[in-house]
Amino acid sequence: MGLTIYKNIGAIVGAETAPAPVKAGKAMDNINVVNDAWMAVADDRIMEIGSMDTFSQMSFGGACRVVDLDGEWVFPSFCDSHTHIVYAGQRDGEFIDKINGLSYEEIAARGGGILNSADLLHMTPEEELYRQAMVRINEIIAKGTGAVEIKSGYGLTTADELKMLRVIQRIKRNAPLEIKATFLGAHAVGRECVGRQSEYVDLVCREMIPEVGAQKLADYVDVFCDAGFFTVEETDRILDAAHKWGLKPKIHANELAVSGGVQIGVKHGAISVDHLERTGSEEIEALRGSSTIPTMLPGASFFLGMPYGNARGMIEAGLPLALASDYNPGSSPSGDMRFVAALGCIKMRLTPAQAFNAVTLNGAAAMELSDEVGTLTPGKLANFFTTVPQPSLAYPLYAYTSPLITHVWLAGEKIY
Image 1 (cartoon, rainbow, N blue to C red):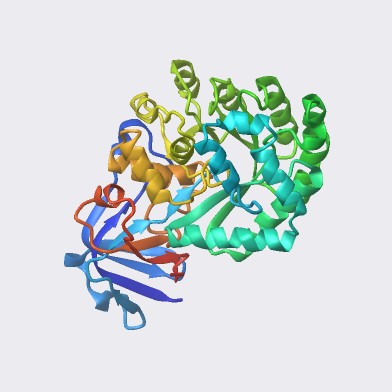
Image 2: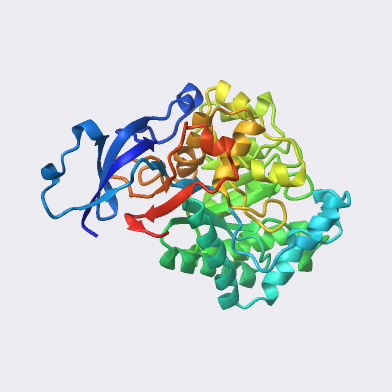
């Protein structure tokens, strides 16, 4: 690709020279914006950023390509640290159930929800599962996402969990964005073990995890530690088993109840604890002094009509905060991270700077990728998207449905 110079940029958002690996507390109010700017990209990496009054094309030599962006804004690609986008079919029938008043828990208790997705996945050939997932991958890339975590968890048998993780690994090889894989066999109890939860936990610990570890199919392990799903004690056991195979924890916690999931996640050094719709002072205190990143999923709150997490309370306590899409067929069927950031502002009362930090740098940190992506920094991957000229940083979140993105670059290559 060589050297490319982008000039006459209206503003570069998140142009950081030496960013911290994560922003916490008051630092989340700070996001550097360089107005009337240029940016040099060498192959797949950002080389240099400056204001146009310092620009001299001659200083780069004659071999570079120059792209005039004519006032368009440049943003770092979104980093979505919690998704379930490898799944089969849809669950739009449950959408009608929700309209008719059934809760998430009631749908699950009737054998729907996650188990419906597991049934569909079992019947879907691996090639077709990959094809459907790549449609969603291309969709989120077009909406500005450049790094994503993808979970299993719709298999719920050893064979089907491994099938999902193989699909994720294939996506990782073929898609242009950064990808982390998470084993979520403890998403629900598989149909063959319904009523025998301890037997299913045995299956996860003694069969699934060793197979995942031996085949090196995942970076992380996750457990749905919540009311009606897996207990703290079961989560503790699963995380102990995963530790032996080098799988780092990420926990579904406190979506449906104050479950103890945050505390068990912190105990095991979880990279993140996710959902957190229901948390209090004990959860905030547990997170203080830890390296675990609280991650909230406002798309699920929006779709299910659940409470929104106490985002401001986390930040006021000096903690970091990441926001992710939870893209999945049942509780958050959207991977639009600009909408996620907008919900952060509209429903969680975050400032635009806090929201953008939550869906870029802090999302990258929740995937251990903040040394590569999350800001526009010399040496990092050239993952960015451009928008039409903006009147302010707040505007893309205020006008959250307007089609503002013009082009997308990943690893220095123009994708759209």
